[in-house]
Amino acid sequence: MADVSDLLANNRRWARQMNEHEPGFFNRLARQQAPRYMWIGCADSRVPANQIVGLLPGEMFVHRNVANVVVHTDLNCLSVLQFAVDVLQVEHVIVCGHYGCGGIQAAWKKTELGLIDNWLHHVQDVAEQHADLFPRGIDDAEAVARLAELNVLSQVANVCRTTIVLDAWRRAQPLAVHGWIYGLNDGLLRDLGLTVTRDGALAAALPRAIAGLAAPHGRTDQR
Ligand code: ZN
Image 1 (cartoon, rainbow, N blue to C red):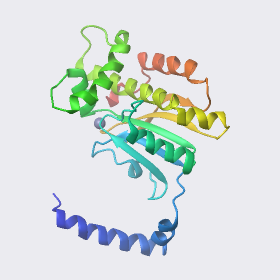
Image 2 (image 1 turned 90 degrees about the vertical axis):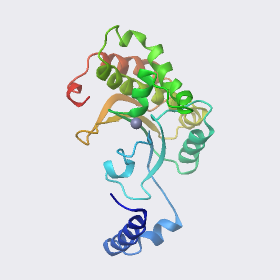
Image 3 (image 1 turned 60 degrees about the horizontal axis):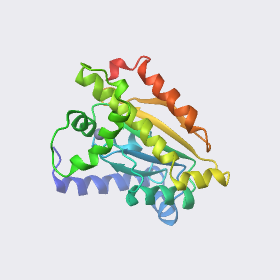
Image 4 (image 1 turned 90 degrees about the horizontal axis):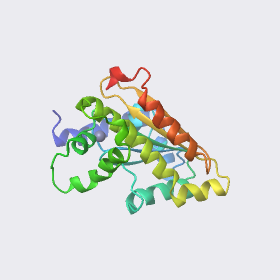
């Protein structure tokens, strides 16, 4: 287990190695960032955004919170999204959930953890809106995995409904919103079959992706 002083030493080593590998790397980055991707993921320490997709600093704009939730009035998330879309002009927004998510599990089991219970009500709302996907007697592990997937699809929909994304599409700015999920036990990402690239496409794409969850194809072993 690393001590906090180790972190500073690690950082000096990392900065040195980066500069050796690519001289002037930090100087260039300090002048500007031009990422093509924005990531909306869980705050879980086991899902380090850049690392799992092999991107360097400067290549992905990242927002993380517990259970990767996009709330219509969350100024924090919306500000990150607006800056990414309007100023940085990212071409892809990726909402990424993960199996084994403690936030999703707490939401499903209605575990009382304090203030965060209020945040996780957003995830409980997702489960309640799709109660048909959680039949009585469903195994808890199965339900939590399904809710993690469904939550990603719902948050993709929420991204697509923001004025930020709608305005970008209306001015014909290329922008795709994707829904992915990550497996803690194999380090692999899975595409949940919901990619939206234009205004009006969500209405057909969302039910199709949700129907795809009801008949999982080869993902059961990852749950
Ligand atoms: Zn999580």
